Each structure stands twice: as structure tokens, then as C-alpha cells.
Image (tube, rainbow, N blue to C red; front, side, top):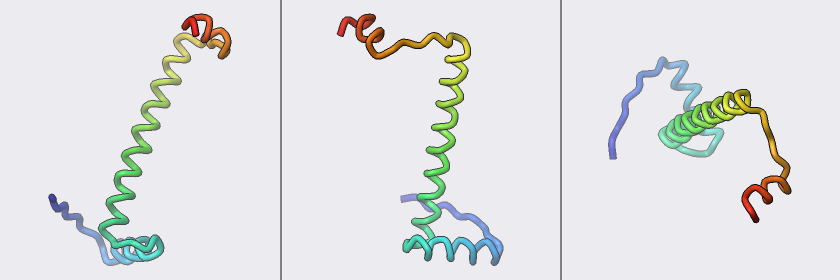
Length: 73
């Protein structure tokens, strides 16, 4: 396992400690889960932006029945 060090002001540390306590987890667990949730959120936003751009290039849509016919389902 690797260790990452971050520097916090006293005020930031107190806020982070309170956040972790509110979640009922250690400070390390709270920071790790929050960090990875943020990464996932930004990835989801990037995918959504890509989908919007693709839709704007070709806004053609198909109903479920049309899709079944196209795919011969």
C-alpha cells in the first residue's frame, strides 16, 4: 500500500475531521472515498459531454420498436 501526504491548515484539518466524524469513518477513509467519488463524477461528466456532442452532430433518435427492427430482434 502506498501513502500520500497532504498538508492542511489547522482550519482545514478541523473541517476534514468533522466531516469524517459525521460519516462515521476515519479521516483517511473519508478523504479516500471523497477523492474517488470526485474522480468518478468528473468521468461521468466527461462521458455526458461526449454524448451530448455526438447527439448534436446527429440528433436522429429511434423508438424501441424501430431499434428492434433495425437490430432484427
